[in-house]
Image (cartoon, rainbow, N blue to C red; front, side, top):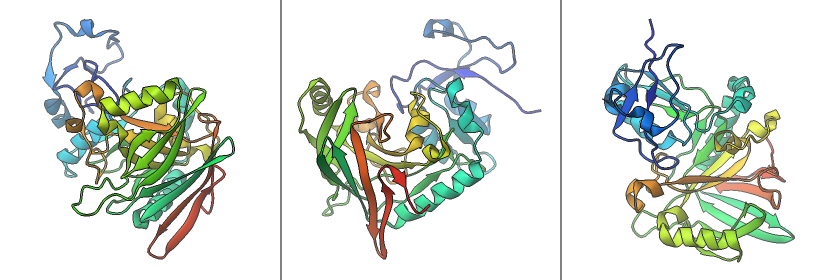
Length: 325
């Protein structure tokens, strides 16, 4: 009989922050109580997360804050053998996401693997945006990095990823090789509320905010306080928008709807080098996706995304729509 355990833990402090050492397992039956605040954990049985993971081969994380980064680390460390585990992370999961679980993940998996194969061999991605008639160009250096596919299928131990899912993604090169600086550079617009913030990118980092306004000022303060936040941590290509899904307000699903670029932590992806050690404290650790679809950034239009590399020069996105898939 499969063993089911529901385990609670105290707030990790932020999306993709490391999990606490201890958790509180309370069983997994229909009558298992729902806890509402951390004080409810007082006096309850404690168990190290390490022990919990050793005792279970499948882990599902429908958490408020994303546990994707730490669970990728856990799954990789546990290995691919019979004593390993696989994990589906579902941060911010709501009833509105249920339709995304009903899609044909065989088709989705094929599509994201096509994109993964392209970004895997690409040496750079050139993106062109338009904001109120002004064109912005951003180059992301994809050298020295593998492409990844998250197609919603987790058949083997040693893997962890989002569910719902449907994206190919890659960590831009962060310049960690001596004498080989990152070539990521350009200007990157992001709509935050009603304001479009424009960052100047150099060496795969946001080194300046070119706009002025409340959101721009707040972003510049964040970058100055936490330089690791300025790192461009991911180029993601979500495909679920092609299946008619719309944003729900949860980044878990919304990032899978189209192009997205993330700031901050990257070490939970193969090749990424920026991790908790680079932030001032656990509460400051962040991996923040900016999703480029009309519903989330109506003032920012994605003209195109072109992948180039050895024997590769291919436009994969034009006017917010994937082409050639």
